[in-house]
Amino acid sequence: MNRSRISFIQLLFAILLLSLYPISLNAQQGFESLDFKHKWELEMLEHGFQLVSKSPAPVPFSMNGEPQASMVISVSKLDLSTQISLEDIIKDEVAGINNDLVIDEYLEDDFTPKDNIVSYTDILAGNKIAVIKYRTKGDKGNPAAMSRSIRHILFIKDNMLYISTVIVLYAEDQDNIRNDQIKLVEYILNK
Image 1 (cartoon, rainbow, N blue to C red):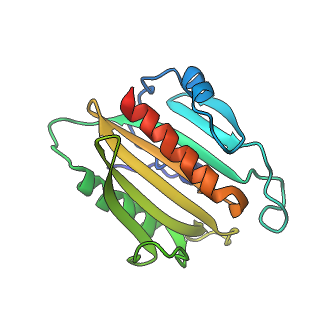
Image 2 (cartoon, rainbow, N blue to C red; image 1 turned 45 degrees about the vertical axis):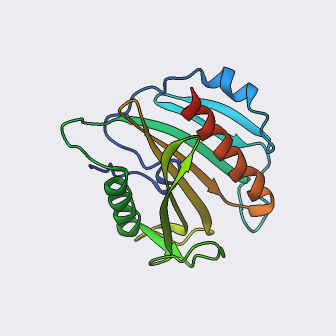
């Protein structure tokens, strides 16, 4: 897959793919019905949407009032002639992460990381999903940023690859933030 050269924050909002298509759900209506635990503000994007925490991260986690967390959903149409699997997509995404980002030490006590990145597949709402988790200090070759925790959830539905990315800058409400990501992914899978 081709990867555009983009800034650190854009890369963290989503691993962008070349052929983006609109998400096939009414984001505003779905957002209101999900009863999220964290307080989010919905922003529509050209090829999806993002939820931005209404709470700023405190100093020293942010020096300019960045939100505690952001969550983006993006989607790309898969080329059916390639027969690419979710496992192949995971390998490509992890290679891109290792190539582009400064990876920080993985601190969670849940899975054994490889090169400080965890990746695995699971079942959610009867569908196969892939999860990639890591911490990063920013783009290689740029000054280090405050470490951020990232979790991508990838899944294929109706020949489309969906990527849900959560970026947590300040972990005070991290459990609710991650649970909200699962709620949103499950909602899309059940649509």
